[in-house]
Image (cartoon, rainbow, N blue to C red; front, side, top):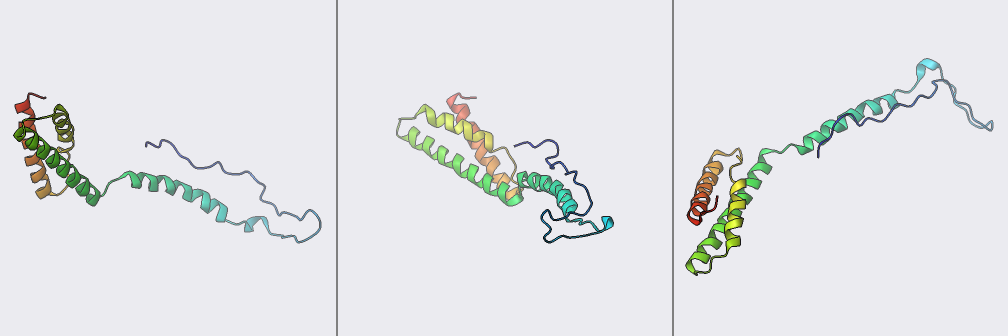
Length: 136
């Protein structure tokens, strides 16, 4: 999701003078210089919400690592299906298409050098099998 521009609400233009009770009940009198700054502080903090939303879109190293492990396991599962199909002499073309789809996600780095090395070896194996099948 892309957020452009400020989403801060428009400031109200109320008079700063004291308000009086309509029916003669309780009334508060205050001087013009003693206005509350709570409303303006609340309006200024709305800009912080934009920053929080942007930070939620950022991914930490743990999430990148978990996603990379999931993609590696998925690629290994499809390679196992390919092996079973080749050994049973009933290879389905959909397995090769899924193998091609998983190859795209293996090139993304996880931030962990050891995991990235294993994923590059899995990617190499996937590319070899796709080349043998004649799929680019």
